[in-house]
Length: 441
Image (cartoon, rainbow, N blue to C red; front, side):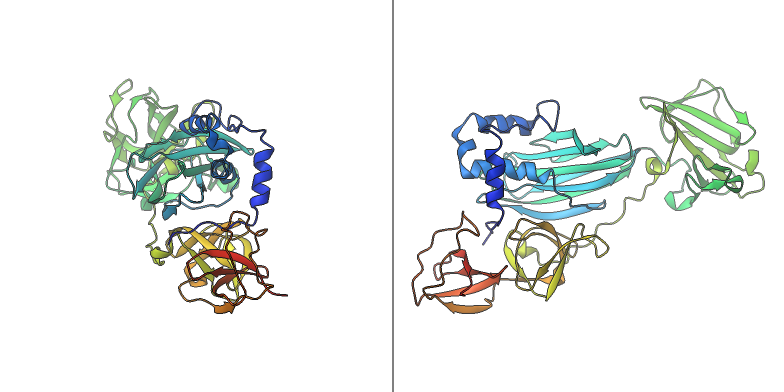
């Protein structure tokens, strides 16, 4: 069975909604209407905005923008959204200028459903919209600078669906030395030069003398063809890009000033002219951004997208509830043992599993805390912890979760204890109803 998120902090969420004076707007996040905002406006114009379900949907979307879950690219997740409890998921990830981010989203339900996908840049705590869609399933965009981006994913109301999300980064330019790749880079941007008196303003790509050097991007050849440091060089004024390309230490050039070249065209050959005459042959490659000067060219050309970890969790648990099976479980900010610990959950704590990646589950605790838990920390609720006979003091603890079903419990009734949290039991009745109860005094 798919889960209904139990959340301790529902009272806080209702206070948040009431503070919004009725109608909810996200205009403070973005400056132009988006599919998401249009949907919010539609909710405001109907009775749905006043229902518990509608309010929960609005709060879920806003809260996800404040979540601090980080992932490293490439990242893939198998996840599930449930109609009974509206949720939104978001991930933060770092991007570099010169990279293109590719997002692929596959759903298990009809493509006609609205699944809102929004990408924001984050600068000084402010969000700026980059991509917004409710129908796109394959999306690409280029990073204009080094920063952190946030991707939010949220379905429309009353939609239950599994999904597969993949986010990866790729270079926007071709590799400038024929037959070589990122492994041939032997010196990087910022490396010290001349005993630390200056820093390297590009990358050095080592290859045998005479290896073809090709245009990383289409451009126009500039007049400058030789200088003291670079020896024989080629400058390309990029077409439709706000930067210039610089190729140095060439053994020879095969283009002339004013010539237009296309990406992949040979413009010269690897050598060691200029101040590289006592070093192995290599290409010095730089990018000079208009108005900013030299920027790190490595992300522009590094064709090493990384590998996705194989999914090794029990994927049947995605979209269900489970519990912690170890004495203490570290809940982390990212799916990595090196990631910061958000909180520590005690044994038998209930978790709701919203997604899975590699050997990690993305989980939510009853108090609303979200994070990642390693598969070794999680077990299913298939086998109850114990059987409990209801006494007069065992009654539903509705203050713990105001939206839970109001079950009729009577003395002598038998329930199964599935999990616990902060002196409360999470139990299941004979008819399958699950609810929180306060432990007996």
